[in-house]
Length: 281
Length: 311
Image (cartoon, rainbow over all chains, first blue to last red; front, side, top):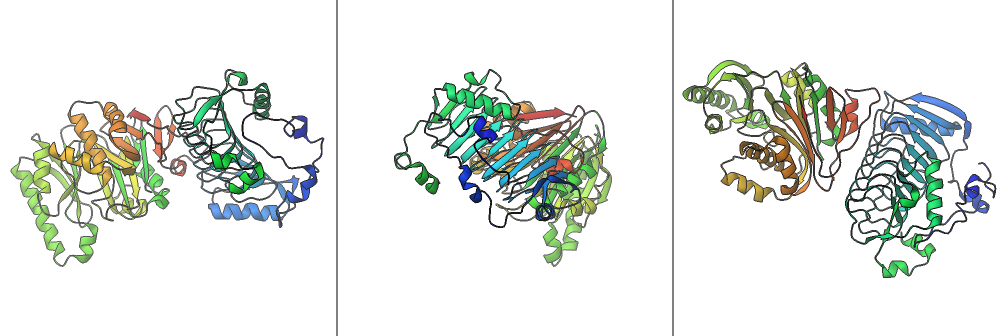
């Protein structure tokens, strides 16, 4: 694994030192904890070792087993051609990996992942990257509903439009949508940040506990407990940096995005320390 | 769960039977119990096509005297059609229990339909100038082969793969539903309607009949009733979003239109592909991929959205 130190790009971008407003707290790993970054039994892969596979005639299980076998052989960059919108592809990868899909995924694509950097040239169906723990997933076209359900970490990016209930039960990480999102986005959101460059459907942030939603376009209406909050300069700077990472921008500038947080004091939850919250969640 | 699909060719005819079979077969995992097709062939302005059955598939296995009964039922249907002035131009026995008639008739279609369905065991699946509705137990490939749909030419079609949850596994409860007694209107649906009985009672009081206890049938009858009262298809569909309660996505077809509607919760899936001359929609993108193996742009319609396309 490449050594993480104070010269790492994320430090240069200020992502480890910023203090964002709002109740959301984000804990970053320290470079000294490097040995805890990989799972026991994770494969030692080399990003320079690259392979392309055509999965047009393979079912989902065979594709996932093939990816695992290739990681075992040390391939760190895998290009999957013709995924054909099949369901549950690229799931359960707990490894560093550059994974590229040339085409579209069906339901539950790249769910339960912790670590890989994924890029999808097509579209994804419902529940993409569900329960994602870390890494990045970038989708070039549109996404279905329940995009990023219950994610805990990482960056999940859709450059097009997404369906309803985006980030439902979200517990951390960042969801970025280049276009619009449907109804009930951020439903029961508990932590993390969601950036919607376009419009948001009705009941945005309904029953959210915590976390922040930034919207660049129009909001149909807010859900129960969701309220508008004041954007700080620091947040605007973070948004600009974050969107620039994925060649995105807010249509009227990040300064004019609307910030949505939970307006309800959840007494027991709010009295917990950040580490205790993590245990509760 | 159930899977629904639809397609429409704008301004041309194509092998919609083969295309819909491929789409529905790829949705088999969403519902293996039965498969149904509503296919819109080239319309016959002065003739009607009727698809009807004189028994359920399971009756064939269990019925002690079913073969004789089916013959009697068919003969009674023929007599009643003749009695009301319908002239059968051609007939085809597609399976032991399913028939396809082409007939001429310029009388009251509802009266004719009621009189036919009054025959014990007879059920009209569809009547239309273009619509042919076929549904049976098993997956799409099996039903398509059984009824010879692989090269059915037409402009548009809708279909359904059913996972039975609230009513029996039989042809009666399979989709699509014909909007009795109106020519060429059919519906497929994925979801649950929670105000089914209240709406059904209201429609029954207006003289409509229900052949099953399946909530999807309500949508067909509801839309047919609205169209009968002079509403445009799209207007009726917009109204349904507010009047039908529950979670649903449905697809409706008429003689020259295809439409889709999604409830305000957007809880049931639908993926859409649209080009200048073709539209395909389905519960899952994998169904659209079955007829478009190359990369295409698709998207999900949003909550409360209604769309209608012309053939």
